[in-house]
Image (cartoon, rainbow, N blue to C red; front, side, top):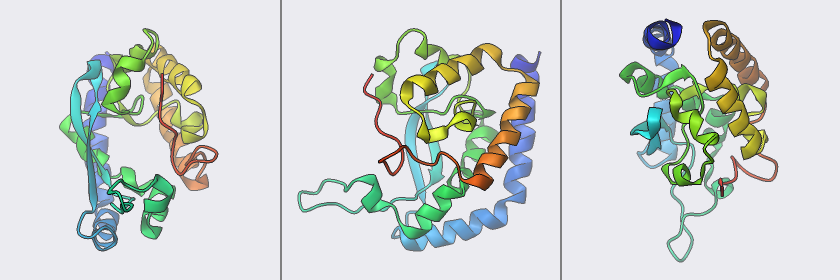
Length: 199
């Protein structure tokens, strides 16, 4: 009952309420990032959802579009703006994803949606992370976030898929608040965010 109906209803209601409550913060971030990113406050990207179905995820844009002399984008660390760094460390860049939850593409809790090009690289076990909707936060995020390796992250994702429940989701949401306050696991060692998955 929880997986099939209750979780979806709670996602919608909580995301709608949260977005309304956070709307002043949303507007302030929108304005500051509009200025910092030359009129581009949002970041849109295709991500695989449940069963690998693609959707457009929306986040606040924390990196500018600076390029080198050859026209290639600079690395993440060079493009991360000061306001972008603050927004990322405080996880405010995730606020627009509440709209993805309201729309039904995402859940509040579930495996994080990654890049579509990773889909052919997953093992059969790792593919199970797509048996549920992706989430704004998840079991892997409260157990290391970007500071853990891909293998461990996928193991945690699949464990969540096999054990999801109301009590587990509630626990993950509480731990997420704690992680955000402590700013734990924002990046992987030696990286501005997370290294690419190579399979």
